[in-house]
Image (cartoon, rainbow, N blue to C red; front, side, top):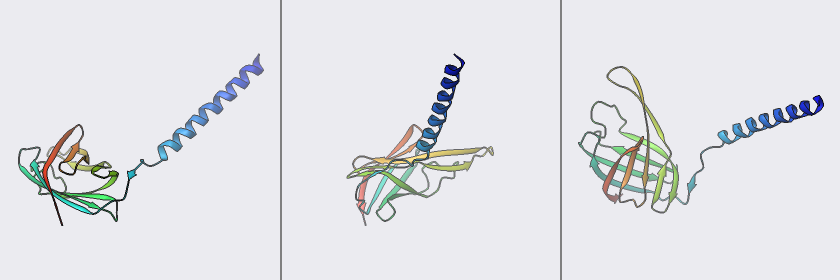
Length: 148
């Protein structure tokens, strides 16, 4: 009886250690990317920012780095949040007109001295509109024109 319990505990320990090893390996695998041949393109779009101000956004797809460079006129979040004028997002998905970037984290200090983080990413299904996504909210840049 004790032999059976001992073997059962031994195999249970092996199982737990095996699950821990597999879990560690799976979390170490980088995010899967679905990228076909990337073509260099530039788009200029406009929208109203989170504070209602007019914002001009530029979306530059770069084949050499498999990334999307987003830059904006500075009014995306108004004057309270010091958001960068441009961010280079690695591409997560690029298939024809469908583009999705990886998430970018932007750390900043608010007026009360508290540390804040904005996680942002960009998506489009048609290159006519680009979604700038922050948490569950987004701003849609529309009327996008391709330029050189």
